[in-house]
Amino acid sequence: DIHRIIYASSGMVIHGYLDRQPYLSIFNETFDDNTMLKGLRKLTVADDPPLPDLTTPGRTVYSKGKIICEQMATDIVKNNSKSISCARFGAVNIEDKPETTWNRTLWLSHRDLCSFINKALEAPLNMSGIYFVMSNNHRLWVDLEHTKKDLGYVLQDGDEKILSWY
Image (tube, rainbow, N blue to C red; front, side, top):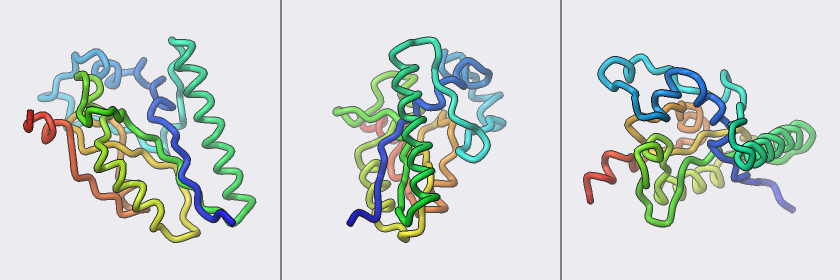
């Protein structure tokens, strides 16, 4: 009998916010760290509903599919005694380093990915939720506090740390 599920969702379910400031300037790499970083309101699962990218058909379909599955998982939790963690994973790649300046904002290291999976598997059986899962990146524009608080997720890597090794 299966009691726990980790659903691999995607950070792309919120890429629709990239049409709005200040997230648009982060995406376009025109963001001024000196004036905006301290006042940046990071997106949260609780306060910012999914908003898919509607400008690229393939991404729209992918994002909407992930959103539907997150909602199905939420419904399953309400109606059953299952534990489901929906992980809105950031950008993961085989090289285990951010490929572009844009990827640096939502990059997720292999080590942080494994850490999240371990924490989600070790969580109490009554624990369920939707979580952003990224590394500790300089221009991270989503809030990971919910993930840290609920699961004890500890970030070990970040874009600046990794890039300083190369």
